[in-house]
Image 1: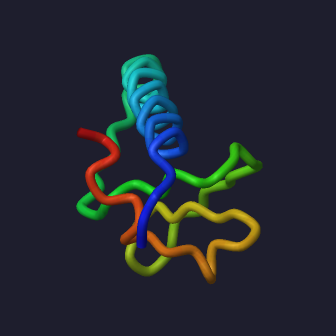
Image 2: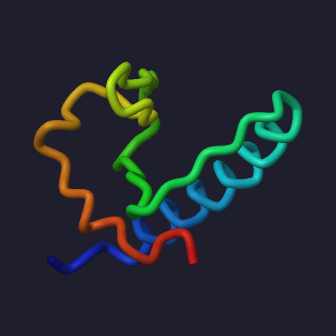
Length: 79
């Protein structure tokens, strides 16, 4: 899949800003999150919520349309 370069740059910029904000939030509350997959960087900002799975204790993000979202399209955005 070919990506629009301007959109890729916007997604990378938003991902980097999110990481900086997450570092501050993690430090403030003493909560660290490990992730082993590529982050989802959506086409546009929207409401995202999080739930902890009672069985696995994994943190899962939820948003409208996630079921059909291609996470592989986000590889290398955080670099």
